[in-house]
Image (cartoon, one colour):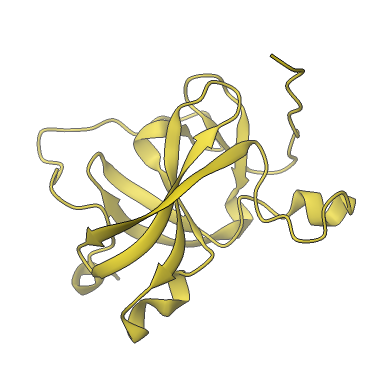
Length: 147
């Protein structure tokens, strides 16, 4: 196995709850109103833009994660093409990337990332815990309850 190259982020950071690898900046949150099978999930515009700032890669929209294969998933808001995203530090699935949305109203998600709160630590080191009240059936935003 090769050397692991991790990028350290500065600011309010969301990190993998298993290995503390930096995943995203709070400044890149688009919405906190998303839901997944483990509870809350946050939509990020980038995970994150650091590599562009460093000019290491001109089109980078993620660091410290690898993007899995594209697959079709039926979510609460319709059919989407998504790719799971994995922490490069420990290999845990931490969320997914929206590759394509088929409903015109859902196109804003394309190219954006979901991080599941159950799988990441917040900027203050907090964890999100699954409760018995958590809805376990969905894997997308409930647009009707967004406020």
